[in-house]
Length: 114
Length: 110
Image (cartoon, rainbow over all chains, first blue to last red; front, side, top):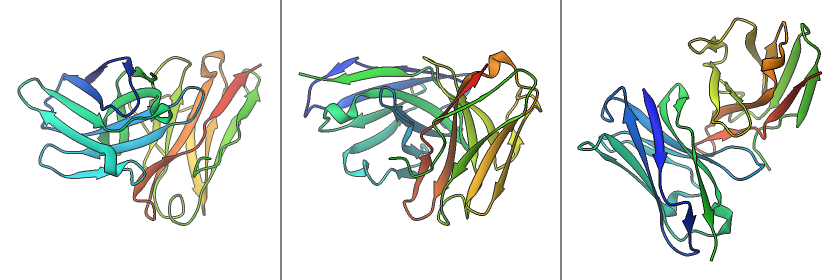
């Protein structure tokens, strides 16, 4: 399985961040998926994981602003994070979730600024 | 402030054995198995160790991990220059109901 994130590099405060992760080498319905982020110069923060059937677990600190979904037709999954602030500026990674996050995409940098 | 505590830096010389520690609590390391990740600057993390001490596909047996109580450690034997990277520990926290990471340890090969 290989993963590739895509999305806007810049988002304005209070808007919604939308990212997609393209899956190759496997079906998006076959595995659990996860999102993780890393602010510049800082450690990793787990955002959540989910399965196409609706099983999900989100980081409680972000739960009220997160939505994850799957697009079977395009073999992609996505992350939406609402009401962003500068604190959401980070590199966002998608990953396959098995015994933890075992395969990662290269990451995409998202900057929140006006 | 990370939930798991790692030293910010570690170092060793080629051929040496180095260990990186990860300290947690009863709700995370004390209960669940720890994963370890390797990250080179500008790149995504790569899984090294999962389920406490199982090496991910392709990871050399120079890398090993252990746990005692609420602390875990990653050991790298026969240190090589290509091991210079950031290392992160991660574990599920039953109280937070979330995966938590350490702040990462930058390993320098002198």
